[in-house]
Length: 178
Image (cartoon, rainbow, N blue to C red; front, side):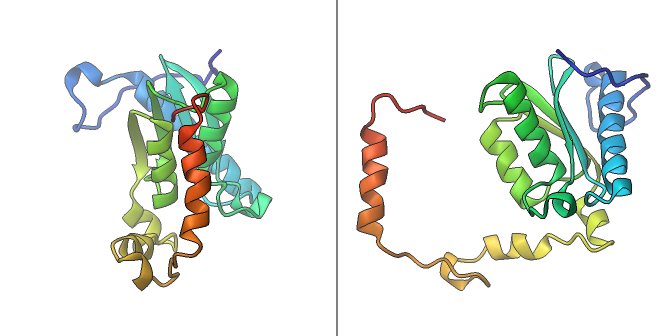
């Protein structure tokens, strides 16, 4: 069952084809923006809200709760992904679209790919967010470097022991592939 998000209006983003122009896009984006506004006004975190839509219905939503939860992973998109997966009882959001008030950070983008979300619509850009202190540029720079040269180095340790559990998992015929 979807969540009622109210009125509809026209989409004016020239990057979408004529057949994809829909008042639903605007309605879902306005819901994401409202969630970001609600959360930031309440002091939960930054102005980041998100909704996940499948077949024209919202199946998950969230807003940034980093301050409220003292958890740096509770970005709006992450909260919405968790909500949608819980509601539908699946780890896959294949066939879904995400609407978010701000362009996703690297962490959220990784989760979007892992969840198999098909499209992302966003309001303000990562450059816009950087202008008020939400600057993820350094993360992008770090990811481009070899693991041992990053500001937080990644150092291999006990590979043989760790490989044992990896191989045992791979050998399990009942494991869930994802």
